[in-house]
Length: 285
Image 1 (cartoon, rainbow, N blue to C red):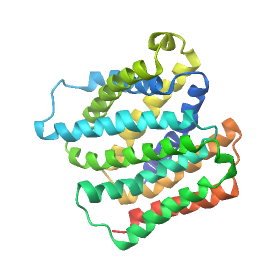
Image 2 (image 1 turned 120 degrees about the vertical axis):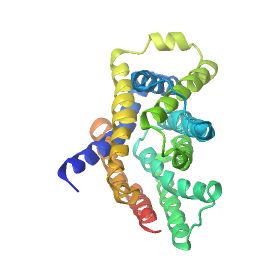
Image 3 (image 1 turned 180 degrees about the horizontal axis):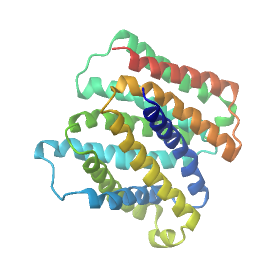
Image 4 (image 1 turned 30 degrees about the horizontal axis):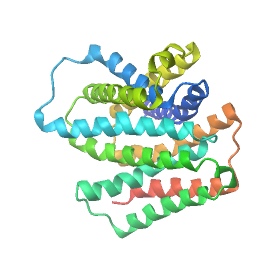
């Protein structure tokens, strides 16, 4: 792999890893979690409008595009923010996101009727066992609700990857634009009814918080995703995906630098099991 592509991969993994501590910083600045998710998606939509030729895709893609947009643009980001909002520790949330892979494989079996080998079932089981071990960490007794939301985030991320298989022929900017508009509209309505006082909450967002939201929208949701699709033009998913094991490392390292989090022994053991299982899941056919 050329040095240029390695640097692109490194950037993508750092961006994905940084998304969690950056979101937590904004939440600590009193930005409501659902409103923040809607604003992130709204920015993605606004930035991509100039790249849209205002043509709708073929009707055969409508159903998959809607399901993908709702899974990725609404459910993933709202549960990500809720998991961070209800947790004082970020590292377990980052590891919980790794369950997206076994969830995605199971969804493929249910939706796409793909066969799952016995080896894959064993690795799916061990990945969940790794998270189960992390649950026994005494520091997590007050963060179980956050871990529950992290599991839902991983579930819908896995579902989004399944629906994305039906959208391979669509332009990437169109997919992200659809994700942005669905995410913004649905989440702003949810925020209005559940969080309330939406206008005042919007007005009270500080400049620092807006900077963090812009970072999530531009660096993570746009740059990292578009660059990943660029790499898929040269390499298979199986070639790229093992590098995803780096993003929890960067995320946990940033959590230590920003918040001073020190992972426990149980967390380290569970994390090794989860990451190893996820890497092997993509190597087994």
